[in-house]
Image 1 (tube, helix red, strand yellow):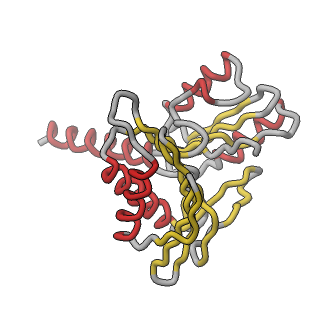
Image 2 (image 1 turned 180 degrees about the vertical axis):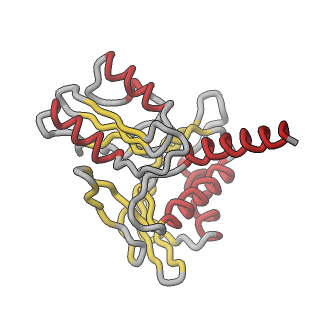
Length: 241
């Protein structure tokens, strides 16, 4: 009986640790999430050639089955719109023989805004939007029928070499950041300054503003020019256009 109790206690602690690792950063509203944008889907080498006509056909067939309509079309670019109940959205789909990309344009009743949060700016939207775009991408990829590599945002989260401005020590810190539990945040500055923050104690109920901590510590050495690069499982940094 005593041994069974110990096993149950261990299982409970383990489950708490797993839950803690998956806990996201709180945006203050349960229906919103950081927007997954932009998407870039690259066709892998060594597969059958994909023509623009192949992509256009897949987009038209798959899009129509999911309520997407082509509002405008030029060579290598489509503007797609969708209406789901009271929600409307518009995206740009650009494409060539190497792959395609999807970029958010506008929406109504989807709670989109640029949210000022603890010194950082986060683009947020109704969480259903991310699911609808993911479903569209999955359908298009299945319709084209070749292996792809998908990148959401500026770069893959795990690609430390893609983080701008960082020197060797900063890249090492970023790799360490990736092993931390969520919520977690990593900020960078043009002069190479960086800072990270996370809830380092699994199972702790203490609420830590990881964005605020990362931004404040980064700005101390970054001349007040820090921007958030990564939050939880997403790269949120946007390159200057």
